[in-house]
Image (tube, rainbow, N blue to C red; front, side, top):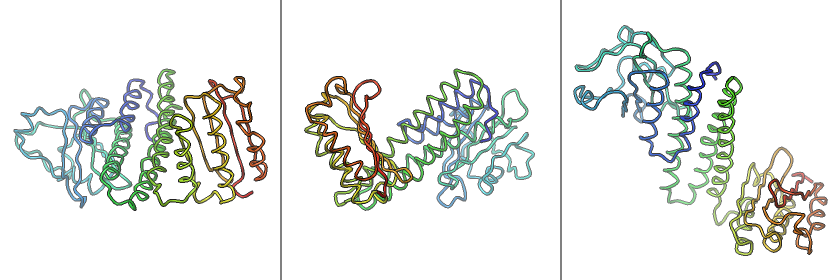
Length: 378
């Protein structure tokens, strides 16, 4: 990423806060307004704007501004449509830095009552490799031009804006969808866009953290990276639930249905996280023992553990299927393994029959953790 060299703690904190806006529950115009304001503030620009392209990607359909007073906007009268240098960013969507906007060969000039503007920085905002619009900044206060660090910061903000835009679009589709067949498609879109882009932002923040030299900034970046990882896991669980229909007979649907069936007996909602291609990779033979293991483990929690929280984590990685069932109950020292409730030998035999293992141990912070791991092709 081009902003590895940024070491200003204040700018890194502001970049971190702005990037985390993608998780905020804000209306899109409000969120984009925040992005413009942050870009303007971090770079010292007098004016900031965000232009949204029309569906044909030929001109600007919307133009949001920061820095102009309402009276000034009224005197200008009309909003830009994408001529001149703004049009250059539409046809050539690459970052553009200019010392003097007015002397560029493509400059179209300013309308009457428009304030003078000198230095210029423009960066495209992309959504799924398509240009959604452009982020513009003008007049860097106290400087003759915007710097490369300014360009790198604004590019990072543009990535965050693109994620927020796509996230909003997909959630709107989810809310409005009426046909059940669309759910699988929307789940794939969420996976292919939101998760992948969040993952990319996480990697970018890791690169920034490795280059930062201020311990406080590094700690805050590490915290943000961990929060992004948790968000990815939560979105994945939501995707799997979204992609599951009543007629679905896959492993994922079977796990979710089984947990729902056992909820009244357990006494509380069990968190379920499913990661990887479980439906396409887990064979019927493995699925049979997997579901039986989940049933026995959750039944034991409900009858013997006296827990108030529990979770089921199922993942497929490489050639391995891994199940972990964790609760915060009495734990091994509290007698949770006695009374035959666990059926440990049965769970152990199921794993060994498939060439795998079953491990029962104390969970971090109290309770019990059961890990059942088998090869996908026993």
